[in-house]
Image (cartoon, rainbow, N blue to C red; front, side, top):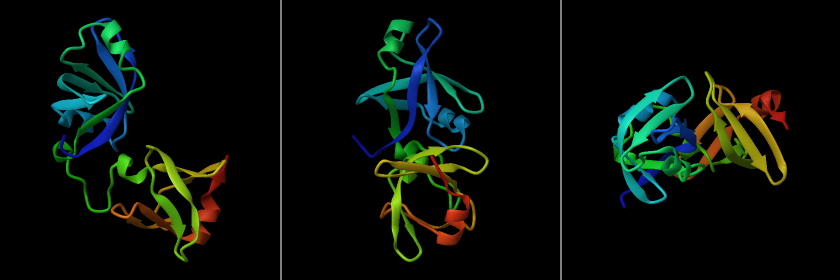
Length: 167
């Protein structure tokens, strides 16, 4: 299969006709409408319809005709071809590309790894380091560099510790 990216997670069935409620892992839930086919559990599904609200997408997929079939998809990741993904502006990244990045200071000190991204006006990154977890905004001045290819996110140490909230 060509290169895919994770674009969402199936939350639950929606209604009785096989529609699924999805947590998008994209900047904008409306970007889910760009995909004509998706992959769940390695199986390809044609997207029959997609509707969105501010933080959720609802998909009707070929072969998923009722609530029971939709229930089997609960909790699974939704993938799509990277080539089908909408182009991003300079300095923008897919959430799936940020998750798993090592967070380091400009001096090279490793602080942990991005475990999750909470989409907001200014995204909030969840940092995990062993058993410790905390959050910080992906704001200018805090994040000084992103290297997706090497899975590394560089932060300004002073600003980072001013805004970091340990859980």
